[in-house]
Image (cartoon, rainbow, N blue to C red; front, side, top):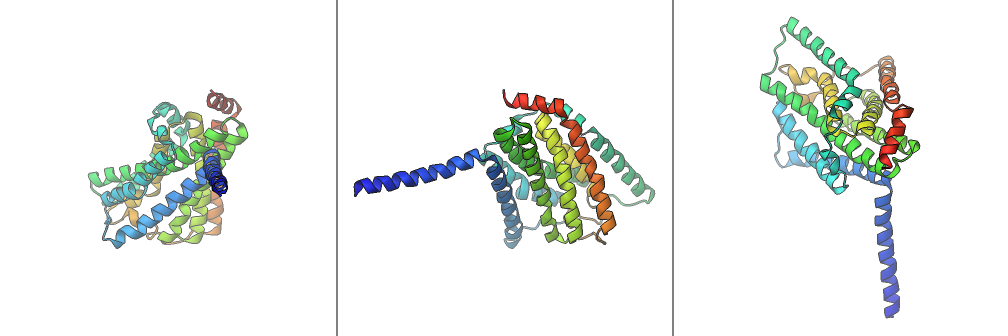
Length: 295
């Protein structure tokens, strides 16, 4: 009887160890679990906190606090749980990462100045300087939380398992990029139209490939978060800078859904991110990444 108990305990222990071993060794599984866990936690906090009286308000300051509580803190905790928090210690190649995304940086800077000039000519009232600074902080935090999740946890986890081959690297990029795109599907719950949401998922997937290419090449999460934030700065410029608008009502302020023609054009334009990614991870540079991964 005692022998049967020991055998059962051994089997149970073996099964438990097998599950733990599979989780530790399966980079794809870990990446997917991290994505799902984050999104579920994020959505639960969005629902539960208002029920206990938490009111973010409509100021940029409220948006910053909301971003920290709903996304930044959870994703930092996740990075510790999934043992990838060491990516936060890497500050090398910050300049090189920005150089890889220089075209996007120039575009967002020029477009921001263009929007600013239009607002000034129209004598549009701006929010206070502190609120505009908080808006800039907000978009950086958005970039940081999403990049830490998708690049710092998902891509990094898969690279540590599959990053010693070209197929493994591109698999890591693809999985993380699709996950990044799907994160934006929840915007439909905030009032965004279905077609706008689908287009955004596709577009952000392509942008995710671009962010991944830079991350795989240079492994600096902060530079990508900054580039990501600049893109969001332009996308939410009116809500973050102009009086009478609120970041947290960005989708409610949309007056018309994207037409089918506009959707196609948007997707085609975002294909440029894929082309740029292939340049960043051209054959020579990809081989260098593999060599560094195998050291």
